[in-house]
Length: 77
Image (tube, rainbow, N blue to C red; front, side, top):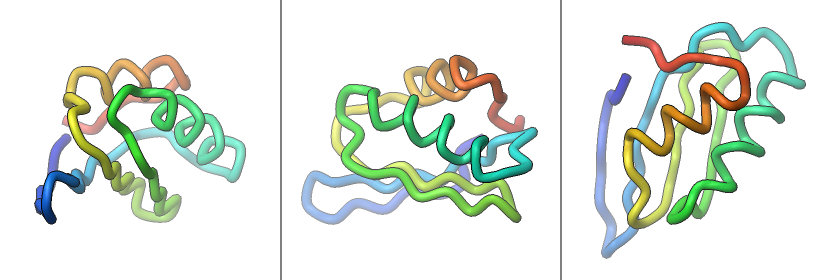
């Protein structure tokens, strides 16, 4: 699920792996749900690898997992 974490000031980048994304619509759905999470400032999705980088301050892994599930996908174990 969570691959890496780096902190610059108060901003945190966390990398997650999302299962089941296959197209641009998948990317848009995941991005839309994640950007609605409190504390998320940015989202970058690599469709090929399934890696999703979430940037911000104060968001939780649980909130990210819930947003990904709301979009219809799952975080990789």
